[in-house]
Image (cartoon, rainbow, N blue to C red; front, side, top):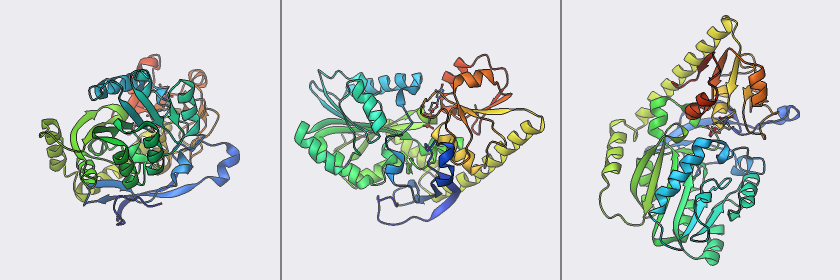
Length: 394
Ligand code: TYD
């Protein structure tokens, strides 16, 4: 499928090769039917937009088997409590709040349902069911103009629409913004957080790129895309989640220049984030990063060391497939998610094991795939005396 922000196609500047579904953890019987797509990225200079050239249909990724649960990290639960506090300043009494891609309800749980009217819209059935079980009103659908019209009839206009790590998943951004426009009050606020292009370039964390992340946004791209729909970017606040994200605040009008936002837009200009040149530099850095990590792993192996992976993240799918790392190097990946345990990693088919197995089969070296959760994980694994490593600095 092609993305629909502009009707123009983009020229890819880099290919990561054949990629499976990043969260497509599978059983051995399904190895021969595994779906792959050619993962290429391009840059739309008109919108300063970094994006996948082509991507699988959303239904292939967000369905009853979606194995990502926001509440699986204590840090993320704390983050969503703080995020809720941040948006509460925009609320009045009896405000209506919609979350797009509400997952298991970790964010909406922080609002009092008797004071505000809250609704989550979540396409993946298993996580939506969990939210419902926790009394978070949830509609199990993709957010678009069709269900926005229905929602409007049901709850009227909305004061606040929020999202996290979701807007970059939506191929038809035009339709999503139209749906937001349809639902939001005249002075309503749209707030969302997404992995940030500036951080990805700086850290060479190319594992942010996978089927679900169709776009990697910057403040410049958000400002340009939303301007087409008469929305203004009024603030941008850096976040440390997901290895470097940005929280964007949008409104139909702006009161005054925001110093914070000005600083970020200046940074993006200085770093050439609006130009293809920064992408070409990133491409070289990815190739270098791949050589370095392969050399590191080969050196461990030459010394007879055993290696396991820690956390079967979606990000790890890009690393393992782009660098061609399989069971020849990594014996298993441990993870806490019951939906992943007992399955195999997408594409490279490394077994996913539980934390007991990890403790009873200690490796000499650990590839930390959830490098963005390193504080939480290092804290839990203080007893490990071997070597942690990753493609980003730890
Ligand atoms: P995250 O970086 O949010 O994943 P993604 O790249 O998919 O966005 O990490 C979530 C995954 O990491 C999930 O599979 C659970 C696993 N995990 C652990 O196994 N142990 C931990 O202590 C943490 C924090 C995460």
